[in-house]
Length: 93
Image 1 (spheres, rainbow, N blue to C red):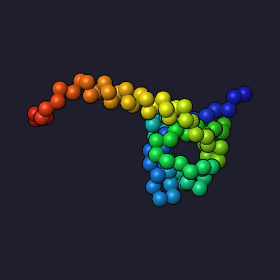
Image 2: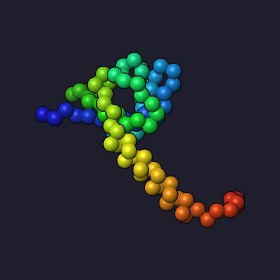
Image 3: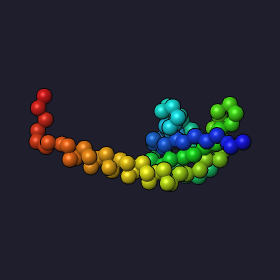
Image 4: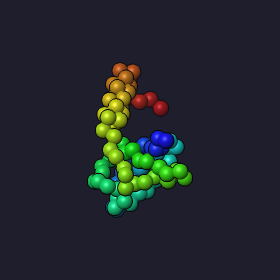
């Protein structure tokens, strides 16, 4: 049986907690930094195994650098597309 895993994006770090956004539900979670196996920073993507009750095992968290690069490239592409559609000039309200 394959172990279920979930992905979380690191939104920010506040004092001794990481604020993570779950890809599966979009909800924010506060996770103590001490429960993670390595130092994290904003914009990292983490893969975390979950148990039968869908509880994350933070001690077995892994960084997903491939997914981080994919998301960064997607963001750059989106930004370029928006730049080309901007007519420029002042905004009229």
